[in-house]
Image: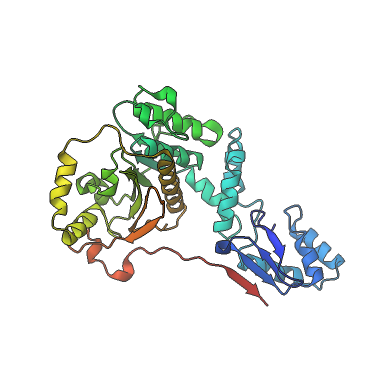
Length: 375
Protein backbone atom coordinates (compact mmCIF):
# COMPACT_ATOMS: atom_id res chain seq x y z
CA UNK A 1 0.00 0.00 0.00
CA UNK A 2 1.01 3.62 -0.48
CA UNK A 3 1.89 5.21 2.85
CA UNK A 4 -1.42 6.60 4.12
CA UNK A 5 0.28 9.23 6.30
CA UNK A 6 1.46 11.19 3.24
CA UNK A 7 -1.08 13.46 1.55
CA UNK A 8 -1.30 13.07 -2.21
CA UNK A 9 -1.80 15.80 -4.81
CA UNK A 10 -1.27 16.08 -8.55
CA UNK A 11 1.10 18.92 -9.40
CA UNK A 12 -0.04 18.77 -13.03
CA UNK A 13 -1.21 16.07 -15.46
CA UNK A 14 2.05 14.13 -15.20
CA UNK A 15 3.54 14.58 -11.74
CA UNK A 16 2.07 13.58 -8.39
CA UNK A 17 3.43 14.74 -5.04
CA UNK A 18 3.29 12.64 -1.91
CA UNK A 19 3.53 14.71 1.26
CA UNK A 20 2.86 18.38 1.94
CA UNK A 21 5.84 19.23 4.17
CA UNK A 22 9.14 19.57 2.25
CA UNK A 23 11.19 17.48 4.70
CA UNK A 24 9.53 14.24 3.60
CA UNK A 25 7.78 15.12 0.33
CA UNK A 26 8.43 13.07 -2.82
CA UNK A 27 7.43 13.91 -6.39
CA UNK A 28 6.75 11.00 -8.77
CA UNK A 29 6.59 11.35 -12.51
CA UNK A 30 6.00 11.39 -15.31
CA UNK A 31 2.89 9.31 -14.65
CA UNK A 32 0.36 8.63 -17.40
CA UNK A 33 -3.39 8.44 -16.77
CA UNK A 34 -3.49 4.65 -16.69
CA UNK A 35 -0.62 4.37 -14.23
CA UNK A 36 -2.31 7.04 -12.13
CA UNK A 37 -5.40 4.84 -11.98
CA UNK A 38 -3.24 1.94 -10.83
CA UNK A 39 -1.84 4.06 -8.01
CA UNK A 40 -5.32 4.43 -6.52
CA UNK A 41 -5.45 0.63 -6.05
CA UNK A 42 -2.44 0.55 -3.71
CA UNK A 43 -4.59 0.82 -0.59
CA UNK A 44 -3.62 -2.34 1.27
CA UNK A 45 -6.68 -4.36 0.27
CA UNK A 46 -5.07 -6.27 -2.61
CA UNK A 47 -2.18 -8.70 -2.76
CA UNK A 48 0.38 -8.71 -5.56
CA UNK A 49 -1.44 -11.29 -7.67
CA UNK A 50 -4.71 -9.34 -7.61
CA UNK A 51 -2.84 -6.15 -8.48
CA UNK A 52 -1.36 -7.91 -11.51
CA UNK A 53 -4.87 -8.77 -12.67
CA UNK A 54 -5.98 -5.17 -12.17
CA UNK A 55 -2.95 -3.94 -14.14
CA UNK A 56 -3.77 -6.26 -17.05
CA UNK A 57 -7.39 -5.11 -16.96
CA UNK A 58 -6.16 -1.53 -17.31
CA UNK A 59 -4.16 -2.54 -20.38
CA UNK A 60 -0.72 -2.18 -18.82
CA UNK A 61 2.00 -4.47 -20.20
CA UNK A 62 3.48 -7.25 -18.07
CA UNK A 63 6.23 -6.00 -15.82
CA UNK A 64 4.89 -2.45 -15.57
CA UNK A 65 3.39 -3.11 -12.12
CA UNK A 66 6.64 -4.54 -10.74
CA UNK A 67 8.66 -1.67 -12.17
CA UNK A 68 6.30 0.85 -10.60
CA UNK A 69 6.44 -0.89 -7.25
CA UNK A 70 10.24 -0.89 -7.38
CA UNK A 71 10.27 2.86 -8.08
CA UNK A 72 7.81 3.58 -5.28
CA UNK A 73 9.76 1.41 -2.83
CA UNK A 74 13.01 3.16 -3.76
CA UNK A 75 11.33 6.51 -3.07
CA UNK A 76 10.15 5.30 0.35
CA UNK A 77 6.46 5.52 -0.50
CA UNK A 78 5.37 1.92 0.11
CA UNK A 79 4.15 0.40 3.34
CA UNK A 80 3.68 -3.31 3.95
CA UNK A 81 0.45 -3.67 5.97
CA UNK A 82 1.48 -7.12 7.27
CA UNK A 83 5.16 -6.41 7.98
CA UNK A 84 6.07 -6.64 11.63
CA UNK A 85 2.87 -8.59 12.25
CA UNK A 86 4.13 -10.33 15.43
CA UNK A 87 5.08 -6.98 16.91
CA UNK A 88 1.75 -5.37 16.11
CA UNK A 89 -0.06 -8.50 17.30
CA UNK A 90 1.61 -8.07 20.68
CA UNK A 91 0.35 -4.49 20.81
CA UNK A 92 -3.14 -5.61 19.83
CA UNK A 93 -3.06 -7.95 22.80
CA UNK A 94 -3.15 -4.93 25.10
CA UNK A 95 -6.56 -3.33 25.13
CA UNK A 96 -6.51 -0.13 23.09
CA UNK A 97 -2.68 0.03 22.92
CA UNK A 98 -2.37 -0.08 19.13
CA UNK A 99 -5.13 2.49 18.65
CA UNK A 100 -3.32 4.83 21.04
CA UNK A 101 -0.14 4.44 18.99
CA UNK A 102 -1.57 4.65 15.45
CA UNK A 103 -0.60 8.29 15.06
CA UNK A 104 2.93 7.47 16.25
CA UNK A 105 3.02 4.59 13.77
CA UNK A 106 2.03 6.97 10.98
CA UNK A 107 4.78 9.38 11.95
CA UNK A 108 7.35 6.58 11.99
CA UNK A 109 6.22 5.45 8.53
CA UNK A 110 6.99 8.93 7.17
CA UNK A 111 10.42 9.16 8.77
CA UNK A 112 11.56 5.57 8.13
CA UNK A 113 11.01 4.76 4.50
CA UNK A 114 11.43 1.01 4.30
CA UNK A 115 8.18 -0.99 4.30
CA UNK A 116 7.49 -2.31 7.79
CA UNK A 117 10.14 -0.10 9.38
CA UNK A 118 7.58 1.79 11.44
CA UNK A 119 6.15 -1.35 13.08
CA UNK A 120 9.61 -2.72 13.81
CA UNK A 121 10.74 0.47 15.54
CA UNK A 122 7.54 0.76 17.53
CA UNK A 123 8.05 -2.81 18.70
CA UNK A 124 11.69 -2.07 19.59
CA UNK A 125 10.60 0.78 21.90
CA UNK A 126 8.76 -1.76 24.05
CA UNK A 127 12.05 -3.43 24.99
CA UNK A 128 13.81 -0.21 26.00
CA UNK A 129 14.42 1.20 29.45
CA UNK A 130 14.78 4.94 30.05
CA UNK A 131 15.49 6.69 33.31
CA UNK A 132 14.31 10.27 33.90
CA UNK A 133 16.18 12.16 36.62
CA UNK A 134 13.79 14.76 38.00
CA UNK A 135 10.01 14.99 38.42
CA UNK A 136 9.34 18.69 38.21
CA UNK A 137 7.38 20.41 35.47
CA UNK A 138 9.85 19.29 32.79
CA UNK A 139 10.91 15.86 34.02
CA UNK A 140 7.45 14.51 34.83
CA UNK A 141 6.11 15.59 31.44
CA UNK A 142 9.10 14.00 29.67
CA UNK A 143 8.46 10.71 31.50
CA UNK A 144 4.77 10.77 30.58
CA UNK A 145 5.54 11.52 26.92
CA UNK A 146 8.08 8.70 26.68
CA UNK A 147 5.63 6.26 28.20
CA UNK A 148 2.84 7.43 25.88
CA UNK A 149 5.22 6.95 22.92
CA UNK A 150 5.48 3.23 23.68
CA UNK A 151 8.79 3.09 25.57
CA UNK A 152 8.52 -0.12 27.57
CA UNK A 153 10.11 0.90 30.85
CA UNK A 154 10.23 4.48 32.08
CA UNK A 155 11.51 5.01 35.59
CA UNK A 156 11.66 8.36 37.38
CA UNK A 157 14.14 9.27 40.08
CA UNK A 158 13.47 12.21 42.42
CA UNK A 159 13.16 12.90 46.12
CA UNK A 160 11.02 14.97 48.47
CA UNK A 161 7.33 15.60 47.94
CA UNK A 162 5.25 17.20 45.21
CA UNK A 163 4.89 20.96 45.65
CA UNK A 164 2.01 23.02 44.25
CA UNK A 165 4.33 24.59 41.67
CA UNK A 166 5.32 21.15 40.33
CA UNK A 167 1.80 20.67 38.97
CA UNK A 168 1.47 21.01 35.19
CA UNK A 169 -0.83 19.87 32.37
CA UNK A 170 0.58 16.58 31.10
CA UNK A 171 2.71 16.27 34.23
CA UNK A 172 1.99 15.76 37.90
CA UNK A 173 -1.67 16.43 38.76
CA UNK A 174 -2.94 18.72 41.53
CA UNK A 175 -4.11 15.78 43.64
CA UNK A 176 -0.48 14.60 43.88
CA UNK A 177 0.59 17.62 45.98
CA UNK A 178 2.13 16.36 49.20
CA UNK A 179 2.90 12.87 47.87
CA UNK A 180 6.37 11.49 47.19
CA UNK A 181 7.51 12.71 43.80
CA UNK A 182 8.80 9.35 42.58
CA UNK A 183 5.55 7.57 43.53
CA UNK A 184 3.39 10.25 41.91
CA UNK A 185 5.54 10.14 38.76
CA UNK A 186 5.28 6.34 38.64
CA UNK A 187 1.49 6.55 38.58
CA UNK A 188 1.66 9.24 35.88
CA UNK A 189 3.86 7.00 33.74
CA UNK A 190 1.45 4.10 34.17
CA UNK A 191 -1.59 6.22 33.23
CA UNK A 192 0.21 7.52 30.16
CA UNK A 193 1.20 4.10 28.84
CA UNK A 194 -0.69 2.78 25.77
CA UNK A 195 -3.03 0.09 27.02
CA UNK A 196 -2.59 1.30 30.59
CA UNK A 197 0.16 -1.13 31.50
CA UNK A 198 1.00 -0.68 35.16
CA UNK A 199 4.57 -2.01 35.12
CA UNK A 200 6.48 0.91 33.58
CA UNK A 201 9.11 1.78 36.16
CA UNK A 202 11.77 -0.86 35.48
CA UNK A 203 10.97 -2.93 38.58
CA UNK A 204 9.29 -5.93 37.01
CA UNK A 205 10.42 -9.39 38.00
CA UNK A 206 12.94 -11.20 35.83
CA UNK A 207 15.86 -9.87 33.84
CA UNK A 208 16.33 -6.12 33.87
CA UNK A 209 17.19 -4.48 30.52
CA UNK A 210 20.12 -2.10 30.49
CA UNK A 211 19.50 1.62 30.30
CA UNK A 212 18.99 2.81 26.75
CA UNK A 213 19.04 6.47 27.79
CA UNK A 214 19.05 8.73 30.84
CA UNK A 215 17.16 12.03 30.61
CA UNK A 216 18.52 14.52 33.12
CA UNK A 217 15.67 16.97 33.83
CA UNK A 218 16.39 18.40 37.29
CA UNK A 219 13.99 20.72 39.06
CA UNK A 220 16.95 23.02 39.61
CA UNK A 221 17.58 24.18 36.05
CA UNK A 222 21.21 25.03 36.80
CA UNK A 223 22.01 21.31 36.78
CA UNK A 224 20.77 21.14 33.17
CA UNK A 225 22.28 24.43 32.02
CA UNK A 226 25.67 23.79 33.68
CA UNK A 227 25.64 20.04 34.45
CA UNK A 228 27.95 18.70 37.14
CA UNK A 229 30.54 16.31 35.62
CA UNK A 230 30.70 14.31 38.87
CA UNK A 231 27.03 13.37 38.56
CA UNK A 232 27.64 12.05 35.05
CA UNK A 233 30.78 10.04 35.89
CA UNK A 234 28.98 6.70 36.06
CA UNK A 235 27.13 7.29 32.78
CA UNK A 236 30.35 8.24 31.01
CA UNK A 237 32.18 5.25 32.50
CA UNK A 238 29.48 2.79 31.46
CA UNK A 239 28.87 4.37 28.04
CA UNK A 240 25.27 5.27 28.89
CA UNK A 241 23.83 7.97 26.59
CA UNK A 242 22.26 10.87 28.48
CA UNK A 243 20.30 13.97 27.51
CA UNK A 244 20.00 17.18 29.53
CA UNK A 245 16.81 19.27 29.63
CA UNK A 246 15.46 21.93 31.95
CA UNK A 247 14.43 25.51 32.61
CA UNK A 248 16.54 28.10 34.41
CA UNK A 249 15.47 31.71 34.97
CA UNK A 250 12.90 31.72 32.12
CA UNK A 251 15.36 30.05 29.72
CA UNK A 252 14.72 26.55 28.42
CA UNK A 253 17.57 24.16 27.61
CA UNK A 254 17.54 20.92 25.60
CA UNK A 255 20.86 19.14 25.18
CA UNK A 256 23.46 18.12 24.87
CA UNK A 257 22.70 14.51 24.12
CA UNK A 258 25.94 12.93 25.28
CA UNK A 259 27.28 9.81 23.59
CA UNK A 260 30.15 8.96 25.94
CA UNK A 261 33.51 8.99 24.21
CA UNK A 262 32.00 10.42 21.03
CA UNK A 263 30.48 13.81 21.86
CA UNK A 264 31.06 16.56 24.41
CA UNK A 265 30.13 15.53 27.96
CA UNK A 266 29.41 17.67 31.02
CA UNK A 267 33.14 17.80 31.78
CA UNK A 268 33.92 19.01 28.26
CA UNK A 269 31.26 21.73 28.53
CA UNK A 270 32.57 22.94 31.89
CA UNK A 271 36.19 23.00 30.74
CA UNK A 272 35.41 24.79 27.49
CA UNK A 273 33.34 27.44 29.28
CA UNK A 274 36.11 27.95 31.83
CA UNK A 275 38.62 28.44 29.02
CA UNK A 276 36.47 31.21 27.57
CA UNK A 277 35.54 32.83 30.88
CA UNK A 278 38.11 32.59 33.71
CA UNK A 279 35.45 33.72 36.21
CA UNK A 280 33.10 30.86 35.30
CA UNK A 281 34.44 28.26 37.79
CA UNK A 282 34.23 30.77 40.65
CA UNK A 283 30.64 31.73 39.82
CA UNK A 284 29.62 28.13 39.24
CA UNK A 285 30.93 27.10 42.64
CA UNK A 286 28.89 29.87 44.28
CA UNK A 287 25.71 28.93 42.41
CA UNK A 288 26.06 25.24 43.22
CA UNK A 289 26.81 25.71 46.91
CA UNK A 290 24.81 28.85 47.69
CA UNK A 291 21.27 29.21 48.91
CA UNK A 292 18.74 28.68 46.16
CA UNK A 293 15.09 29.58 45.82
CA UNK A 294 12.61 26.78 46.53
CA UNK A 295 10.45 27.91 43.63
CA UNK A 296 12.08 27.85 40.18
CA UNK A 297 11.36 30.50 37.55
CA UNK A 298 9.65 28.03 35.22
CA UNK A 299 6.78 29.18 33.00
CA UNK A 300 4.15 26.53 32.15
CA UNK A 301 4.31 27.06 28.39
CA UNK A 302 8.11 27.12 28.38
CA UNK A 303 8.29 23.96 30.50
CA UNK A 304 5.88 22.22 28.12
CA UNK A 305 7.93 23.29 25.09
CA UNK A 306 11.18 22.05 26.65
CA UNK A 307 9.61 18.76 27.73
CA UNK A 308 8.10 18.19 24.30
CA UNK A 309 11.35 18.86 22.45
CA UNK A 310 13.39 16.79 24.89
CA UNK A 311 11.00 13.84 24.61
CA UNK A 312 11.00 14.07 20.81
CA UNK A 313 14.81 14.09 20.73
CA UNK A 314 14.91 11.16 23.14
CA UNK A 315 12.48 9.09 21.07
CA UNK A 316 14.36 9.90 17.84
CA UNK A 317 17.55 8.62 19.47
CA UNK A 318 15.81 5.46 20.71
CA UNK A 319 14.59 4.87 17.16
CA UNK A 320 18.17 4.89 15.90
CA UNK A 321 18.68 8.50 14.82
CA UNK A 322 21.05 11.23 16.03
CA UNK A 323 18.83 14.25 16.79
CA UNK A 324 20.05 17.85 16.58
CA UNK A 325 20.86 17.87 20.31
CA UNK A 326 23.66 15.33 19.78
CA UNK A 327 26.72 17.23 20.93
CA UNK A 328 24.75 20.48 20.92
CA UNK A 329 22.57 22.57 23.19
CA UNK A 330 19.31 24.25 22.18
CA UNK A 331 18.12 27.26 24.18
CA UNK A 332 14.98 29.36 24.15
CA UNK A 333 14.13 32.34 26.37
CA UNK A 334 11.04 34.28 27.28
CA UNK A 335 9.49 36.46 26.02
CA UNK A 336 10.59 36.11 22.36
CA UNK A 337 10.90 32.31 22.37
CA UNK A 338 13.36 32.04 19.50
CA UNK A 339 15.24 28.74 19.57
CA UNK A 340 19.00 28.98 19.11
CA UNK A 341 21.62 26.24 19.06
CA UNK A 342 25.26 25.99 20.12
CA UNK A 343 27.58 23.23 18.94
CA UNK A 344 29.58 21.84 21.88
CA UNK A 345 33.04 20.56 21.02
CA UNK A 346 34.75 17.78 22.98
CA UNK A 347 37.58 19.12 25.14
CA UNK A 348 41.04 17.63 24.70
CA UNK A 349 41.68 17.84 28.45
CA UNK A 350 38.56 15.96 29.50
CA UNK A 351 39.08 12.38 30.72
CA UNK A 352 36.01 11.21 28.75
CA UNK A 353 38.31 10.90 25.72
CA UNK A 354 35.94 12.38 23.14
CA UNK A 355 38.34 15.27 22.45
CA UNK A 356 41.13 12.86 21.53
CA UNK A 357 39.18 10.99 18.87
CA UNK A 358 39.68 11.81 15.17
CA UNK A 359 37.05 14.26 13.90
CA UNK A 360 35.62 11.75 11.43
CA UNK A 361 34.97 9.21 14.18
CA UNK A 362 32.67 11.47 16.18
CA UNK A 363 28.92 11.21 15.96
CA UNK A 364 27.12 13.09 13.22
CA UNK A 365 23.42 13.30 12.48
CA UNK A 366 21.64 12.36 9.26
CA UNK A 367 20.39 14.96 6.82
CA UNK A 368 16.99 15.08 5.18
CA UNK A 369 15.37 17.00 2.38
CA UNK A 370 12.82 16.80 -0.38
CA UNK A 371 13.30 13.97 -2.84
CA UNK A 372 12.28 13.96 -6.46
CA UNK A 373 11.80 10.75 -8.40
CA UNK A 374 11.51 11.29 -12.14
CA UNK A 375 11.88 9.19 -15.23
